[in-house]
Length: 284
Image (cartoon, rainbow, N blue to C red; front, side, top):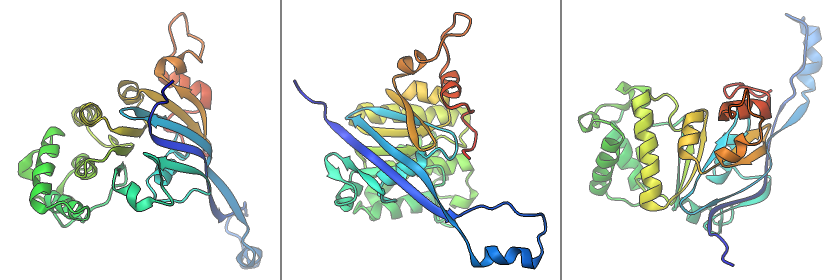
């Protein structure tokens, strides 16, 4: 019996953060009332990712749905080598992301909702700079960037405008193009269509589907958009308070929630039933 090849394997990953413990105090406290807190600041541990495991096969799009603060972006940062997990291990095409981080970074890239740029440079200059870090020539980078941006609905004549003059949606398209310049085999998409207008969102979603079919890439997608998750994802995990509480295809997830008035539940209704919150809610 053949075992499936997994481009991404996550086993028992946990990630904690530490912060000063929040304390309740009187409104406008006097100085003597604040003295104890000035000299004794208690720390508390926040478990952002709690013993998560997953496998994503070659050519699969794996979705992660969660409210704000549920841990999905922290998990993506651990996979992308930006954060070190406190426990567990992550392998990309068999390579450990901690022990072989340089090798792993060569085959992956990440798009995030908080992408940053050199705002006084044009999109073309930003993309060429990013490509040069991977050893791609300026000529090749410009050609690739133009082709990708045009497929995303970004007009080539605007490539020479300074980034600070572009809309939030256009900047997000540049962020997506930057991630795709290196032809990654693992693509981490952390809310990639946030801030895009409906047409631009559809352009990006179509491009994601094309990447999967053309390159057989491994894609992990976090999103707030239920319709986007249903359209793109082969399997979906629902994350709540740092833990996966459900995983499966859209049909399998919907089957976990009783139908309403004879009609099957929607993915949004499944999310609310399992987590007790709306997709846009903040975690405590």
